[in-house]
Each structure stands twice: as structure tokens, then as C-alpha cells.
Length: 599
Ligand SMILES: Cc1cc2nc3c(=O)[nH]c(=O)nc-3n(C[C@H](O)[C@H](O)[C@H](O)COP(=O)(O)OP(=O)(O)OC[C@H]3O[C@@H](n4cnc5c(N)ncnc54)[C@H](O)[C@@H]3O)c2cc1C
Ligand SMILES: *[C@@H]1O[C@H](CO)[C@@H](O)[C@H](O)[C@H]1NC(C)=O
Ligand SMILES: *[C@@H]1O[C@H](CO)[C@@H](O)[C@H](O)[C@H]1NC(C)=O
Ligand SMILES: *[C@@H]1O[C@H](CO)[C@@H](O)[C@H](O)[C@H]1NC(C)=O
Ligand SMILES: *[C@@H]1O[C@H](CO)[C@@H](O)[C@H](O)[C@H]1NC(C)=O
Ligand SMILES: *[C@@H]1O[C@H](CO)[C@@H](O)[C@H](O)[C@H]1NC(C)=O
Ligand SMILES: *[C@@H]1O[C@H](CO)[C@@H](O)[C@H](O)[C@H]1NC(C)=O
Ligand SMILES: *[C@@H]1O[C@H](CO)[C@@H](O)[C@H](O)[C@H]1NC(C)=O
Ligand SMILES: *[C@@H]1O[C@H](CO)[C@@H](O)[C@H](O)[C@H]1NC(C)=O
Ligand SMILES: *[C@@H]1O[C@H](CO)[C@@H](O)[C@H](O)[C@H]1NC(C)=O
Ligand SMILES: *[C@@H]1O[C@H](CO)[C@@H](O)[C@H](O)[C@H]1NC(C)=O
Ligand SMILES: *[C@@H]1O[C@H](CO)[C@@H](O)[C@H](O)[C@H]1NC(C)=O
Image 1 (cartoon, rainbow, N blue to C red):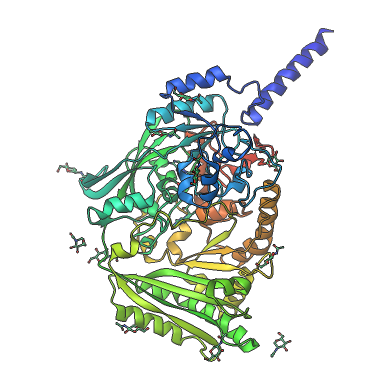
Image 2 (cartoon, rainbow, N blue to C red):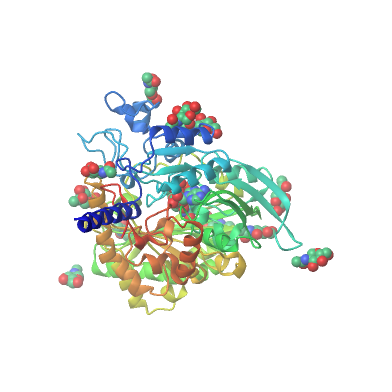
């Protein structure tokens, strides 16, 4: 009689042990901390713990989670990235938080769905000291609680939120301090740097460095934060000249899930320093501070360009328009080597009509070419633009010249915090880095067919936008090896960061199913095209397909195994999980149940 009982007890023990190891803790579990335990955590971090109270709660009868916000204001500001950044729990693309507790009427709202915390974190640390971050992270990882990190919540793949998680909100790490002669660790040299808390956004940092007549390499949108952009690479207007944002980092301060505060630079914690410079957002720890290289302000900014579209509703125009796009794409590497940056946007079907103001839908493809040059004359910009336009078959495509302009650097880059109004919609895209090999040194017919293949759209009448960001080239290629960090090596051989917006995601469906359907389509229709077109290259994680089947190769390339070692060393409990992050294949995050479980 004893034997079976013992067996049972052992089996039960084993079951509990497995259950505990298999999934991160959730509020239904026995292991989930009691109210008293949360209270004592709160006390140990100076009362900075917030119980999640979604802004949208103010729109539901009885305001079930006691939001201090005003429903009318929440609805009015739902598309503004700046508001999501200021609300502790919120993210820009709510589908990744399971559309939990949306204000009525916004994208993704389903009548009858109650306000719940759902895909949002359960608690948030409104941290202002590294000690608070360290205490909270150690506490949570000891209890097998998932940890997420939110800077602004702008992540296009929803990686700054998570169900049943404790969120570390870096919003209040706002230090900005210039140091014109900062001592470079391990050398006798100094550099002109700005020391920035990770809670800053680029607009704030640009404003600050403008006052000292310097500039930094950052993103193009004022409300985007330093934390995610720098750690995953980061491109902007100056990246094709000076390298990526992650290439500008001389030192970081990181708090780990085990509660250590580590200064990482060229001579200490080099493995962590390497990892957070390129493949880092939300994965290895919380970066509280960056030491960033500053650059001299360019003398001027010159812009110019043109748009093109098929001249007639004819096969000849259709063919000519695709050839035009291919010709432009092939010229990009030389144009960038001559000092130009900017964007080339290709559009077809209805998207071409709405973006270019065409009178009717045209066959083939249309495009907008917008160049930016620094320290450049207008003559030189004009010459580049007219030489490029002259290469097109102007009998069959029409062009509209953009009037060129020259401005001071500040007049052209002054941050506009209200400009970022894309929040609240659905975000799902695919991206790839393309170099000379894929653009110029490829038979023209092949280039044309790759362009046509990548510009498919899931909704065949809506069409596609293919955006070529001219953001790599000489800058990233000439960054010394030791400053490169773990950024995907393909950046160094690329010129263009290409993004395609072609999937149509059902915003109001069940979020996990809608995302899966969209991602399945992208994987089948588009990832396969990149793989064929640019098998040796990869993708930019911050603006890529979060659910790419090629994620390991495309986001990390040859760095993957080394990154996995760093991940295991600094986050041994696997408390920090993000979609398509390192070790992503060891976990399954089910947006529907909210559970994060080992597979
Ligand atoms: C309107 C808009 C414009 C954009 N323009 C550009 C551009 O010009 N160039 C470009 O390269 N990208 C651009 N992006 C993409 C941008 O890089 C990503 O959205 C990026 O995730 C933003 O980082 P964040 O810290 O603001 O966002 P969050 O959503 O707060 O964070 C993004 C990721 O980084 C992690 N993270 C954030 N802070 C920290 C920290 N301190 N420590 C550890 N992990 C952290 C989060 O956990 C999450 O995984 C743009 C995005 C938007 C929405
Ligand atoms: C944490 O403590 C502060 C200050 O006492 C309090 O205002 C806040 O509500 C507490 N947070 C939680 C989650 O209880
Ligand atoms: C809510 O905000 C709206 C618009 O911002 C404002 O007009 C209204 O007075 C506010 N209501 C309350 C109760 O504060
Ligand atoms: C996510 O949303 C779906 C559909 O609305 C719902 O059935 C599910 O319970 C939600 N899950 C969580 C964790 O919020
Ligand atoms: C977060 O903390 C800061 C102080 O660091 C405080 O000013 C702010 O009101 C807090 N925000 C919330 C939402 O509690
Ligand atoms: C820095 O300068 C000191 C004193 O001149 C010298 O001994 C040392 O070797 C130098 N270090 C480096 C890394 O150049
Ligand atoms: C700002 O810096 C630029 C480039 O370094 C220099 O040419 C210019 O004179 C400086 N302007 C001021 C106002 O100091
Ligand atoms: C512009 O020229 C100055 C020197 O006059 C140089 O320091 C700076 O790096 C240049 N900027 C760019 C973006 O090329
Ligand atoms: C293109 O230009 C030609 C010549 O000016 C004109 O006849 C034609 O209508 C234009 N096509 C479109 C689509 O506007
Ligand atoms: C255009 O090409 C298609 C086949 O691709 C053909 O069926 C059609 O007749 C052609 N139209 C014209 C106007 O040449
Ligand atoms: C540049 O081209 C525009 C027409 O596109 C012309 O008006 C302008 O005078 C040109 N500027 C220079 C400096 O060549
Ligand atoms: C496809 O796109 C068109 C044009 O943008 C739109 O009117 C239509 O509703 C979309 N169809 C579906 C099924 O989403």
C-alpha cells in the first residue's frame, strides 16, 4: 500500500515542480505574491509601484480600474505617441497587448469586450533610481514573474508589454549632461559626449545638444525613445554618415534581473556591452544610462527629389514604371557614396492614388524620391536629381520635380513632438537590408521581378508601400570593429533598409489570431522573396516582422550563439522575454491566455 502512495506523492511533487518551471507566474497561481508581498515590494522601492490602471478604464461603467484619466481626452489622444509614452501602462500598437481595455471607437475596439488588464502588465515600477529597478527586478525574477521594460511603448512589434508581467518603466530616467572631454575607458583619449538617461526621447536630446552646437545620431521622430532605438541598432538622418545609433555608445549602465548594477564599456563587462549595442532591447537587463558620442552640426541641409508615375494606362507605361524603380534602386549605392541620404518610396494600386494624389489608379508602380544632403550645395543636389531623372524612360513615365531647398540644420531638424500620430493602429511589416549586391550588381530583369514580388499585397486592391531608407552605406561600413557591438553584421554591407507594408490585419478580431494570420501571410508571400533576393543579408529588428520564420538568421545572423551565452549569463531565469528575442524558441508567449511558458 505504501508503494503506490509514495509513487503518487512523487508524481505530484514532480508535477508541481514542472508546472512551476514551465510557465511564468500568473495571478491564479499559488506562487503569485499576496497583496502583502506586493505592499512590501512597494515599500522597498519608495512607494513607486503602480497597480495597472489602464487609461481606457475611464471609458467603462464604474471605471473598474480607477484610471485618473478622462475618457474624452483618452479617445482624443489615442493616436498620439506622446500620450502613450506618458501613460505608464500603454503602448502604441495595442493589438500586442491583446487590445485590452481600449476606449470605445478606436481601432481594435470590440463592443462587449470588458475592460481587463489582459495583455497589459499587472504592476509597473515608476522608477527614478537604479536601486529601485534592481530591487524590483530581483524580487520578480526570484518569484518567476515575467519582467517587461517600457521606455515610450513605441515598439512596432509590441515588445514593451506583456501579460502578468512586472513592467519597469524608464520614463523618469531623464538625465542629460554634456561632457566635452569624457575620458574613454582604457585609453588616454577623450571624446565629446552627452550622458543620457534612457527615459529621454530623441526630441529632448536634440533640443539639449542643439544648445551646445552639437548633434547626435538618433531617430527621425521626436517621441521615439533612446532605450529601444539604440539597443537594436537605430538609424536616422545622420546614420549614413556617422554609423548607427548603437555605434555611438561609449558606455552603458545596466541593471540585471538578478539585481546587479553594472557599468559596461570597452574594459569592463564587455560581453554585456557588446550585446546591448545592437541586439539588446528588453533582453539582457534595463539600461538606465547611455554615454553617447556627439558630432559637429552640419553646415546646412539641402533637400530635393521628384515623384514619378506611369504616363498612360498602357503596358509600355507599366513596364517603364517598373524599370524606373529598378533603375533608381540600382543607382542608390552610388548616390549615397556621393553623400546623399533620404528615402525612396514605391507605391502601387490604391496606395499610389492616395499618397501621390493620382487622378486614377495606374498600372505598374509609382514612386517618391526624397534626398537629403549635408554640407552640400544646391547645384550639386540639382545635378544628382536631374541626372537620375534623365535615366528614366520619360516617354512612358511622368515626373514631378520637388522644389529643392536649403536650410540650416536646426531649421530642418527641429523636433516636433506633435507630429507622431500613428499610434493606435495595427503594425505588422517586413524589412530587409539591401546592398550593392542586391541593388546594383544584379541582372536588371531579376531586380525588376524581385521588386514586383515584394510589392504584393494581401488585400489586392489596397496595394503596397515599399520604403527604401537610405540609412546605411559608408557610415556604418567605416565604424571601427570595436565600436560595432552586436548589431546585425549585414548593416556594414548594406545601403538600404527596405520596409514593406503589405499585410492587412483584422484589427477587431481576436488579436492572437489576427496577428497570426497576418504574419503567416507575410512569411509565405514576402519573407520567401527576401530569402531569395538577399539570402546573406538580414532585417532590422525594430522595423521588421516580429514573427518572421527566419528571425534567428535575419535579426542576429552570425552573432546568435554568442548572444545566447550572454543572455544566459545575465538573465539566467529568463525573466525578460520579447518576441523574436534571443532564446525566443525556448518559450511560447500565448497572447490569448497571457501565459509565457517554456516549450
Ligand atoms: C513614429 C515612429 C518613428 C520611428 N522612427 C525610427 C527611426 O527614425 N529610426 C529607427 O531606427 N527606428 C525608428 N522607429 C522604430 C523604433 O526604433 C522602435 O519603435 C523602438 O522600439 C523604439 O524604442 P523605444 O524605447 O522608444 O520604445 P519601447 O517600446 O519603450 O521599447 C522598445 C524595446 O526596447 C526595450 N527597451 C526600451 N527601453 C529600454 C531600456 N532602457 N533598457 C532595456 N530595454 C529597453 C523594450 O523592452 C522594448 O523591447 C520608429 C518608430 C515609430 C513608432
Ligand atoms: C505604493 O505606495 C505608494 C505610497 O505609499 C502608494 O501611493 C501606492 O498606491 C502604492 N502602490 C500599490 C500598488 O499599492
Ligand atoms: C475631459 O477632457 C475634455 C477634452 O480634453 C474636456 O473638455 C472635459 O472638460 C474634460 N472632462 C472632465 C470631467 O475633466
Ligand atoms: C485576449 O483577447 C481575446 C479576444 O478578445 C480574449 O478571448 C482573451 O481572453 C484575451 N486574453 C487576455 C489574456 O486578455
Ligand atoms: C512617477 O514618478 C515621478 C517622479 O519620479 C512622478 O513625478 C510621477 O507623477 C509619477 N507618475 C505616476 C504615474 O505615478
Ligand atoms: C596613458 O598614459 C600613461 C602616462 O603617459 C602611459 O603610461 C600609458 O601607457 C598610457 N595608456 C595608454 C592605453 O595609452
Ligand atoms: C557650430 O558648429 C559649427 C560646426 O562645428 C561651426 O561651424 C559653427 O561656427 C558653430 N556655431 C556656433 C554658433 O558656435
Ligand atoms: C559637415 O562638415 C563638417 C566639417 O566642416 C564635418 O565635421 C561634419 O562631420 C560634416 N557633416 C556631415 C553629416 O557630413
Ligand atoms: C503624363 O504626361 C503626358 C504629357 O504631358 C500627359 O498627356 C498625360 O496625361 C500624363 N499622365 C498622367 C497619368 O497624368
Ligand atoms: C498588355 O499585355 C497583356 C498581357 O500581359 C495583353 O493581354 C494586353 O493585350 C496588352 N495590352 C495592350 C494595350 O497592349
Ligand atoms: C535647382 O533646380 C531648380 C529647378 O528644379 C531651379 O529652380 C534652381 O534654380 C536650381 N538651383 C540651382 C542652385 O541650381
Ligand atoms: C481592401 O482595400 C480596399 C482599398 O483600400 C478597401 O476598400 C477594402 O475594404 C479592403 N478589403 C478588405 C477585405 O480589407
